[in-house]
View 1 (cartoon, rainbow, N blue to C red):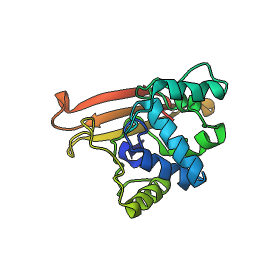
View 2: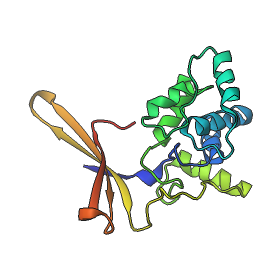
View 3: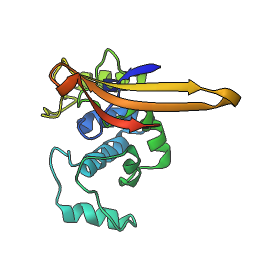
Length: 185
C-alpha cells in the first residue's frame, strides 16, 4: 500500500497562473511559451485573474483551427488540458505527473515532488503569490491523500486500486472519498 499527499502536486483549477508558468518552465518550456500556456490553462479552468473578452478568446481558438473555446469551468480530468490552446502532447506529458485535481491551491513545500519544489522556489524569488486566496482550500487539519493498493494473485495476476480521500475531524465520519478508481493521472 502506498500513501501520497495530494498537496505534493499543483492543482491547475486553483493554482495561480504564475505557479503553473513556473511548472511549465521547470519541465522545459521557454519563458514566453510558459506564460502564454499558463494563461490559457487559467482561462480554460475559469481561474484567470483577469478575464479577457470571450469573443477574443474564441477568435484565437478558431484561428488555431478549433471549433471550441475554453469552458471557463474547473477541469474535471487532467486529459482536458489536451484541448487548451498551445498544449501539445509533449508538454502535457511533461507536466501531468506534477498535477492533481484534488490538492489545495498552494502545494505543500515539505511534500512537493522535486519539479513542484523547483516551481515553488522560483515563484518565491519573484515575490508573486503562488496561489490566490481560495474558499476551496481545506483547513490545515484536513489532509487529502491518495491511497494505492496493489494485490498480486496466481499466474502473475495483479490488481491496482486507488482512492483519493480527504481526512479530518471536521468532516462527517472523519473522511470523504473524493475519487475511486484505478488511475487518476
